Image (tube, rainbow, N blue to C red; front, side):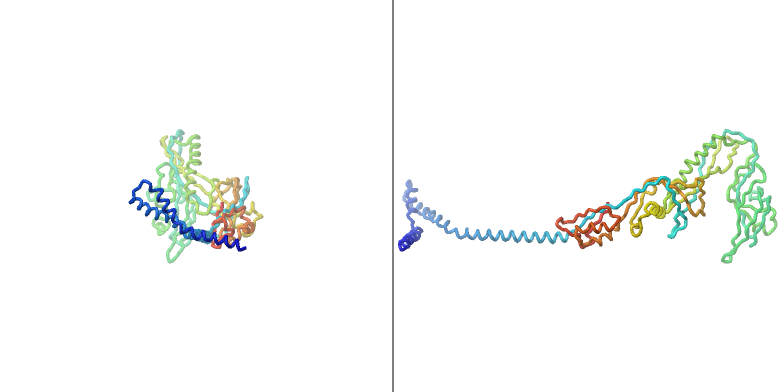
Amino acid sequence: MPRIILEDIKLNNKKKVLPKKEEPIFIETKNIQKDFNADNLKDSKFDNYFNKKSPVKQKIRRTPYLKNKIGGSNRLLYVFLGFIFIAVLVYFGGIYFQKADITITPKHQLINYNNKPFNILKESNGETDDIMVMIYTDKVSKKMILTEPKDVSVKSAGSVVLYNEFSAKPQKIPSGTFIADNEGKTYKTESAITIPGYTTENKKNIPGQITINLSAFLPGDTYNGSPTDFYITSYKGTTKYNKIYGKLKSPFVGGALGTVYTFSDMDIKNIDELAKTSLRNDIFKKVQSSVYPGYILYPDASTFSYKVLDNNLSKTPESEVQIEGTLSVILIKEKSLINNIIKISLSQITGVELKEINISDLSKLTFNFINKDQVISKDISSVSFYLSGSLDAMWNPDVELLKTKLIGINKGNAPSIFRQDPGVSSALINIFPIWQKSIPNDLSKINIILK
């Protein structure tokens, strides 16, 4: 045991002596300075001395090296803390910018009709009628060459409104009574007439009135025209003359005498084609532009009639024909038609679900009256018709209600919410950021798109 101690002491002595050895400095200097003079040798010794010191200083610099190791540990700590900070920033940023985009495919059902019968009543429980009637009249002129000569004796005819300001009692006018116009031409009534008496409103007399047809007393075209005022000749010189009077309603036309030109069978065919195509289409476009909002007009939900305004008895072959056409149409309230379609074709649907169903493209259906001789008038009370074609009934889920049910729930629980709404066929949920599993608690961050 003492021997081991002595050896340790010797080793320790050697370690203590080593830093004091400076001989290598002088030996190294002598070897390097073989070819230099004494002055240079002194400088070399100086340089070698300081050069020799540098290795020792390098050994002393081990302590800063140990400090650098401690600094490296700090950097790891800073990196770790930075990572934590970024993770926290991302987490809370994800919460702040969280949103949910939900794409819903609504339920739909195809409906096919082939002459499916419907009936809609005019009366409505709403503010407007379920069917409305529009009657529109227009004229067209066409120059023609008449090729049929004919000997005629025809009286001119027109219509007049007779007024009664004379008495509150009705006034009777016998058949064959002569009536003169302001131009001195005479006409004759074709039947007995009774003009209603006047009425009083706000101390003002409102004359009774009646419309009558008149024909000229003599044949010929001299009676053709538009006189303005008419008087009963038998009342002349009495108080009735200016109290019972007439006003023109439609011009007097058709009077002719002698050889005239009239329509041939081909002319009649051309007029009929012109009226039923060009004139009818022009009137229909004008009616179509005037359709009330919320109503639909089918081209075949209409009746058309026309007349030639005079009998076209012309003294020369050249003639200008005036054709007057009248188009009567039925407008159907879209909401009423949709309700009828749902009632007939989706009868199993009830309750709140009915409000979600929307049917568009009603105009693509073909409309035909069940009664081919259907008469359209202002007092029509119902209409029966066939519909043909295809419709797509589309459900329209309540988006805002779905948002309130989805708010804040886990993504995995959303399908049960969608199954409660019969109008939802399928749904796809995308939540940002991707690690979020719940739908946002803010309604404004939930976006529902109906596909």
